[in-house]
Image 1 (cartoon, rainbow over the protein chains, first blue to last red):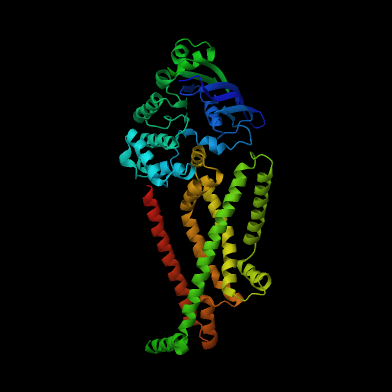
Image 2: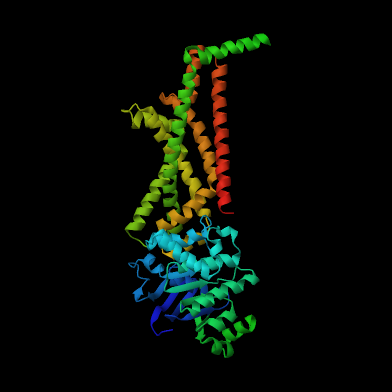
Length: 247
Length: 242
């Protein structure tokens, strides 16, 4: 981890129905290069909204997000270019069902980075080998298990060689016995120095892999800190209450 | 009974064999197929474009910032709405006659005009079918495309539309069958399609039974053939991603 700030979030707001619902109510934080930030909190706390705002899948109603020095909330910025540098992994995998695994992974590098097919497939196969799925390259997503799908989703995002990976509850839709294989891939990624923002309910992962944990509730960043400290000595009543329920 | 068969045989010879009258049927069939196939292509092209404009407007009108883009999309959507209303609100045979006698009054290339008129007509129905397919495609697919860095149109083109087309294939096949049979009104503007061919023969032989039965039978066989073909295509597409 360096001290270089990769993403700076300032006073981020997301309101629905003309401000009647405040999904995010003034969140400010920084993500440094190489850091693994884990976002926890009860459901409806705004943690997924926060993550989805980082690559503007959700348009913030206020505040700014600066990614690699560029204010991406500025309407004149071309968000498509910045999204290429921000990989995203979804709860429901969202693999493209009409394409093979290999095609899922090579489509964006070929169309957006203008890589040749051979080059893109080389990279994809290399990544597939790393997650132990090289033999499934020509399969279709529906032929894979949930855990396999999510591993493919992770390496599909990696094919674009992103500077940060965003994970939106990557293990929540998995059968319990498949959670481990996905978390292992994420741990490996963290060890390789990838910057990661992870929304999850896996407290073990937060404790083991996280460099910093953000606790959100009611659209506000309530508490943040180093995992061991945060889990051992929660200061706010909200976090104490939350940890009592999940640990 | 023997008399009846002898009569039928004479009838058959008079209607189809004498003066090579069967050639009316074959050339009519060729025209029907030409009109249907070209109109289908026009319909699908129009339908995809309109469906994308309409669904884009419907899902983004709340969040789009005011500006040139929003204005153009709104205008496009309004034009599409007018087109859909007029085409779906008037009979195809009236549209065909307006196209032939008014819009292209100076041209007598009936076949081309019919292809265009039926294509424009079909486009309205295809647009709504495909729009249904786009709207029912999981929004996660769209988000996954955008998160990789694809722009709106690329995401639609590579990811959403292929899935939408596949899921609406049965409805599209139905539209194709309807179109094939609708072209039977092409005779209104002096095009010798399959139906008109039967009618011409009936007009000279004054014997309606066999010509009309033959025409009906050919339509039936065509529809059965295309239904079988689409069924095969559907099974192949299903196999590719089960």
